[in-house]
Length: 150
Image (tube, rainbow, N blue to C red):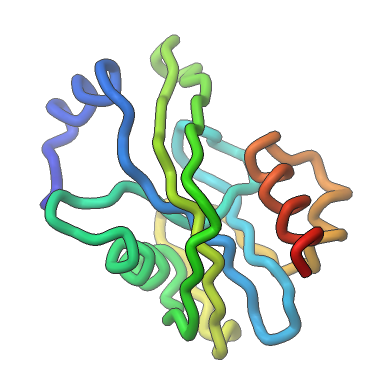
């Protein structure tokens, strides 16, 4: 269920939003990050993902967000944990508070990647290569944890 933008703007100023973030890995164990077009984290490399809809399970949200944002299908889905993500919103002078479940998502046909309007760029890189980039501490921390598990 889509919330009208005017109502959603009020909600995000008053309470955390339930989200999923997707640590997407291809057959070569490269990780997909997208460069965000929108606040919060506009202009930053981030995991695909977003809000969970009312009545939608987190796993269903993973599949939906992967399809909507990247035109990819999940082969495997593994829950990596739940985190608070609090980000500055320079566009509103406030903060954004998400409670996000991070999932490792395996995809097979990563060449089918096609971004929606949420992102302006996407790249596949091995986690150690991503860690040489300037990343938000949340993304960096999750990639470090991923490399330690591998």
